[in-house]
Image (cartoon, rainbow, N blue to C red; front, side, top):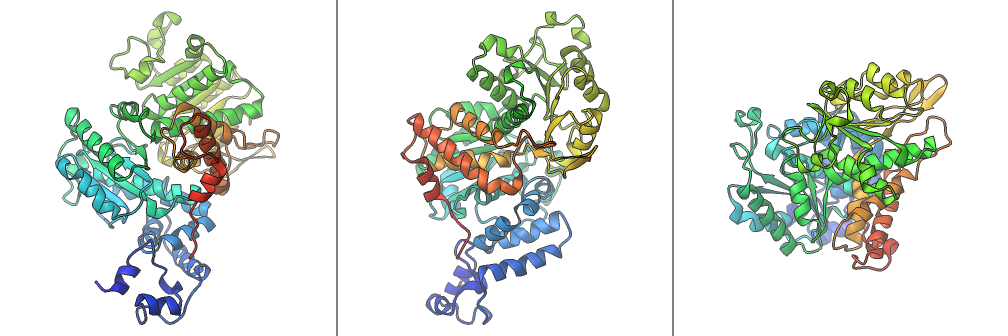
Length: 539
């Protein structure tokens, strides 16, 4: 390959038609580009006009991926200008469709490493090859067993890691040359993929147990050796492995599990924002988590930890939580409980009709929750009967249907507002337009992890923190929850995506400061550390 092609095919340094004549002469690009030298803004205007001609959804995402794989600066410059429009396309909800079709429309992502359970001896070499000598500070890794809303997608799930990293750069400003997406291919239990001749991953059932954990550990140790300053962000691991992996490494190195911790932070931030509006106390709430998987348990744990931090006795705090899963209310004698679930189960002796608490409505009638959060992936589960029963026993019901994509949401905000006569305080896991009801415009907060994980990760990286711990996560939640306007009728409980970059900087600084205050940091000035690390999309 010629020197010119080396440069034009390198998305980290390619400027395309923006290379000046002097640069073209110096770099051997004379004749490789049309004569006109464009500005970055001219490139962005031209490219955005092309984007607008594409059909909505996946075709738009495929077009943006072509720009991403060609010119990172142009891609992120455009995303900065169109953050609200681009977020649902590069991330939720369109990314679900992209994952499902990944093997059929494969485009080599130029920031991904593919590691196989069947070739563990090559893990370090694979990471080295994929990083290509870059100074990696952030790795998003997935085994794609538990992608929220769509389940097990094997190697296709690497797309979720690429999407997460796009948001990290757009929101927080991590240099795109310093990130790496990693797929841990342990096989898949998705029979549709195993039967698909186009599927690109290991064509066998998922490997579990010692062999699986050996792969994870080899990845972690090789990452620490090759990229000693990198934070490891674990994404969409299955229920049986997610907490085990997080707990193994969280006290020894900077690791973060977005499904457990990120979902917990955004739910806590939303609840704090709602309570700012209702003027109620966290300690007076009863929490019902509908869906007791990885995300649901992360939420329960984060809310419980906050109650204890606010001075509630730990034993008393546990009494404020009710978990509902496919079996109904979870009791301490429910079979096959995870360790995380066991900490929050109830005793049957608390209820005269315990055996009847097998569906959401019966549990709501028995418990009278004030906060109900859905991570169930059960579309329409928050029915009119359920919502009205809840609203009959609390003045400002807090209801967060955060399952996504859209087809899996437990209820739409317009219905929640109507069924509660405007009293509900709600946030969703998907972007939703404002709702008009009885002369009030209700702005719907998006309880999307994208509002929080970029600030948490970037803050920890900027601070060179040794760990990411509970106090740092709580600081992030309070930062977000404190941004809402409690006196504005119809105000959202969480800040808008339109201000993503602005409040991500704030969260980053607060997380970095928390690391400094706890003596975990390698820096002394949080604001300077965040500012120094921040990358801007410019030539």
